[in-house]
Length: 449
Image (cartoon, rainbow, N blue to C red; front, side):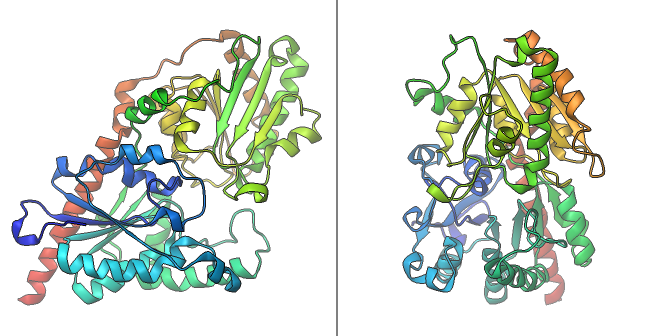
């Protein structure tokens, strides 16, 4: 991994820690992947520290490697073998790789001399490396919170977590405040995460916090089209209307899934000629592998005698296979979480798919504003206090209109959407980085004085 020394460079160096990285196909690596080709345009030279994908579990997508800029160095490390660590209940690759990431990071800091460490992951124990390296080498660090690190209430959908989850929660409750004590900047996908953190840790200045959602790239869809699987999953000459949702469901989405099934059942009652043509497909709905993957919406549909209309495949799919499914579907359906702070990063590729879209979100979700600003599709909202039946009639009314207009295309405001492109959101990241190293330099000079 060839890296430039500080003496030979004309722009600041950025060390990015992204434990899961292409070809690993995990949602938390997409911010870094999509930004890598744009950092230099805004004055930063990136290098990446990651786990070798052969030591991670999950679905790999080799096509993801073709999206990485060749000039960006990537250092990949090993991890302890899962066959050994599972005996003590540790299967997570980031935990198994933590000592290797730590040592590799030390070597990179000594040779690459980064001006900033940026840790972007949902593998939260990895974030503690930022403080360790800062204590040893004085390099400031920025954390990217794509999910809450510590929940004030029990984890969503886990009213009585098992021993493993209780131990992990205990670890998180100790590591988060320790790591946040010396953090220099925080990036988050929603304002709500910043508000919670600054209530817990009032020493974090608002100026060092930046809300930046995930971006998206048309280039990904171009690659998906080139490598489109044949034959397509949906046959458009069958007289049916195929709706698709691709992504995780789980307990936090149970309320939305119920409302969608209830709306489908009501639609079949009100206008059977329209709704009987519907076939709803839910794919990649569980992060668990193989037979451990659990269905969420299909059991609900079966209880309502809707099994002929709803099909769920919980196993995860490669990233570009998922994009191809978005392109093939007649319309896209997006159930949202019952958590008000939930932000659906997947909403951006859904918009780029150029398909009619029907979404059901909590009224405080950031995704609601995105859909309304871009005028993409239809969104129905619910509140924390409303009954599960509350959004059913609005869903039926909007769904009926969509089916009557089929196959109409969405009238997306692409000018409004431009603020959510990978390049624009990378610019915002670099603005935060510039602020952090500016503050860090000022603090260093003040302390020296």
